[in-house]
Amino acid sequence: MSSHTYAVGLATAVEDSVPAADHQPGLAVQEARPLAVRVKNLVRSFGDRPVIDGLDLDVGAGEFVALLGPSGCGKSTLLRILAGLDTQIQGEVACARRRAVAFQAPRLLPWKNVWRNVVLGLPGRPEKARATQALAEVGLAHRGNAWPATLSGGEAQRAALARALVREPELLLLDEPFAALDALTRLRAQDLVAQLWRRHEPAVVLVTHDVEEALLLADRVLVMGHGVIEHDVSLDLRRPRDVADPEFAVLRKQLLRWLGVG
Ligand SMILES: Nc1ncnc2c1ncn2[C@@H]1O[C@H](COP(=O)(O)OP(=O)(O)O)[C@@H](O)[C@H]1O
Ligand SMILES: [Mg+2]
Image 1 (cartoon, rainbow, N blue to C red):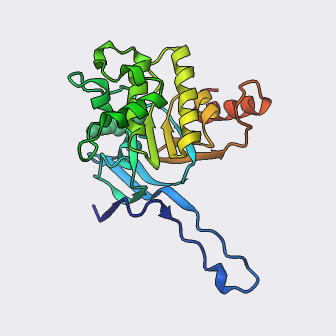
Image 2: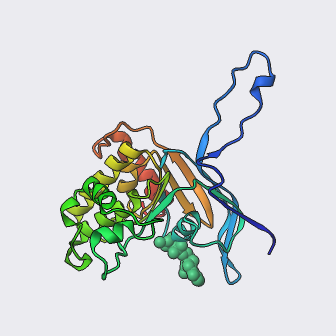
């Protein structure tokens, strides 16, 4: 096992280097494209089995990326690495400094009320007002004093989103955040994430097993398999997305085929 680099918070956004066009007369100087994630030749093994095996990935600042792939292919492993929760890697990973994660289970501490859960882990002694503001963004300002056990599944997941938002992330990492919600609550939660993304413009990496969810929300859809990103599609669909759009149906079919389902 050789060296690895784990560079989190290198800069506010990682600057992608661009060829020195300014030395060539007649060529305009290109803007450097800021990145929220840069991964090069990433390997993560459990025992001697590499789950991630030479993976490359760039995510632009403010870009919304959905990550699909069969169960067990390493999506959560990749997300945990991007979140800085797993550093047993080889290769290079650089991420924007301010990151926040939300998982399928809201993971609220039952012995702290909702607003204290929202600001949990923030430096200093964060004021309740700060939590209330984030809760207001997800429609839960009135539930700040409630105990987590009294929230519905949808409310608990929105509280988890508030906890992510209060960190003002440049990179928001979501691991199947809506998978446990009923269909209607899931649609509302998807809509909320789309709104929050437009308002705050973080880069988002959303792990999902739902092809439609990916097509409704993302700028770009990645399909993971065999330890790498096997397919990478930029979506050129109008927003708000419309499942009745013929283009939508074509992409849906293609993605399902890549996933081995259609
Ligand atoms: N801490 C761990 N120890 C051993 N194996 C693990 C660990 N975490 C994940 N794995 C294995 O790595 C593979 C990918 O897991 P995961 O990233 O959770 O997949 P996905 O999220 O795509 O369903 C699975 O085979 C899983 O069993
Ligand atoms: Mg997973």
